[in-house]
Every structure is written in structure tokens, then in C-alpha cells.
Image 1 (cartoon, rainbow, N blue to C red):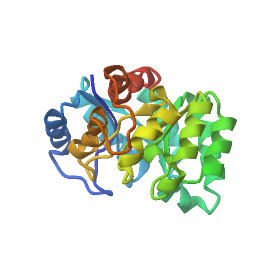
Image 2 (cartoon, helix red, strand yellow; image 1 turned 135 degrees about the vertical axis):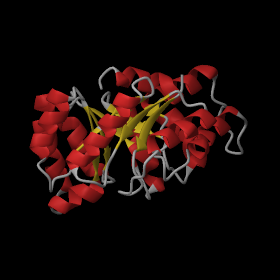
Image 3 (cartoon, rainbow, N blue to C red; image 1 turned 45 degrees about the vertical axis):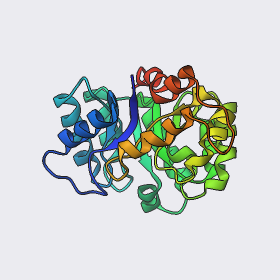
Image 4 (cartoon, rainbow, N blue to C red; image 1 turned 90 degrees about the horizontal axis):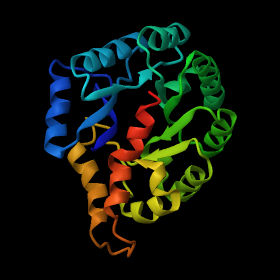
Length: 249
């Protein structure tokens, strides 16, 4: 079982008819069984309606992350996705958190205090600020945090300390999507722990075929001399860890 931990149902806000089917076409080509889908870069209600439509149409293939942005009626939307849709996962992005002001940690805290009280149990957050993430994951120990791009989009030299945080903190996980420095995966996975890393593609901007290949290559010898992934380790990263987390969604 291979599970994609994040696929966007838009392209930086643009949507077109047939996108759901294109996702599945990519999944068939990459031999991905299921995926967690989300819609961002559009108003909160529109985002969640589209994600719900995909999950209703293909319930055996898609799971959902809800989405809110601070400029919308985010409290009302959190109530809707938790109480009406029964969703317990949330996607947040620093590009939208910034719209509420420079203190993105404070905005995240406000959203999660409200959301956790309603039943949000998993948050996938793109917030490349180690100090903020270290503090927030400590403040919300009963929320599971998944950090895309190994936590350090565009700051690849910081990957080791995000790996250390994932290893040391039970509620912190990393995902593999859209990492330029994928050649560091071997040492990073060992450092974080194979049980704390989840495969994700961040499609459609990033091809599931390419993102999967970045992990597949670790099944062969590399010039960095890290041990090849065992079948067990590969299975954990590519689906086993996410399968456990899906029970929270």
C-alpha cells in the first residue's frame, strides 16, 4: 500500500474540470493506492467544498485535509468541516498565515486552539520557522504535526534539526515532498527515524512519478554510502506510517 500524504486539488489556485481524474491517472502510473487531498490558495469554503467533492466521488482513493485561511470566516469553516464533514485534519500554509500579520505563530496558535477544541487532531503546516514549530508542537502535544518538505523548504541545510525534532517529539512527523536536496534523504531518514517520515508528492505542481523516484532510489546503493532501505523501512515511509495517521483523520 502506497499512500500520498498530500496532493493539491488546484494549481496555485487554478482549477479545471477533470482534475480529480488526472490525479488518479498519475496515481495509476506511479502505483500509488491512495492519497490525502486538499485545496488551498482559494477561499476556505470553496477549498473545502472541492476537497469534499473529490472524496465523495472517490471515497476509496482519497482522504481529506480541511483548509482555512485567516482572512475568511475560519471559525465557521472549522465548525463546518469538523461537525458536518467529520474531518479531523487541517492544512495551513505560511503564505496565507502571513495575511493576518507578521506573527504567524500567534495566528497558528489561535486557529489551532479553536480547531483542537472542535476535534482537529492532525495539522499539516508549511511554516518554515524552526523556533515557531518547536514552540507550537510543544504547546499542542495532542495534535499530530506533519511538516511538509522535511520541514525546511528552501532552507535545506536546516534539515538535520527538523529530523532531530521529529525523532525527539512523539507528535512530530516529516514528509518527503518537493525536497530539492533529496540526496540527503538517506541520512535524514536515519536521523529522524523511519517511523517518523511519510511519503508525499505535493502534486500537481510536483509530479508523483518524480517524488516517488526520490525515495525509490534509496533502495539501491548511493554515493553517500547510506544503507539501502530495507523492505520494512520502505513500507513504513511509503504508506505504513501514513496509514496509522489516517486513523486520526
